[in-house]
Length: 121
Image 1: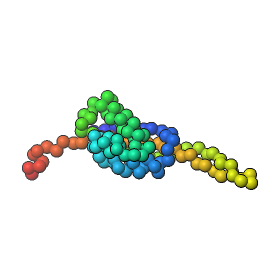
Image 2: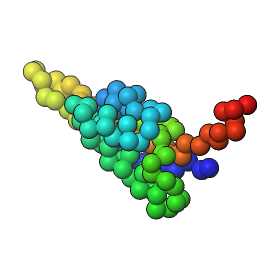
Image 3: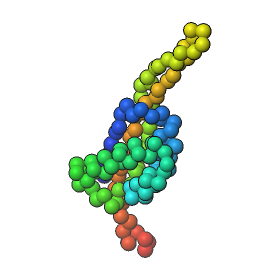
Image 4: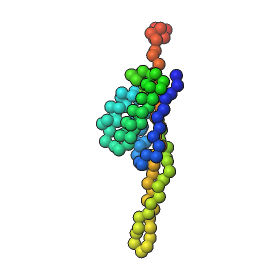
């Protein structure tokens, strides 16, 4: 079985903030993950929902996988390029503002059915 992935790049949210939500869904079934994301009051939850939807669609349409048996096998967020802005301060000073971006990656895979012969042994 090959894992199927979906990637969202250059998302304008800090990776640190997305990781908080991502840790909640890592290793979960796709249905459970959608339920968790729906009721998580963080901005990262909306982003992860879109990426997870894309991963499920890729699995169904490109790899003929059964969506009811999918789970999140791997997920991670990497930092993207940082936009550097300045905030003017008193006496001609300028303080840096770092607007961070993220690259979000989610891998989904099908759970293997355990056969009843293995359970009996």
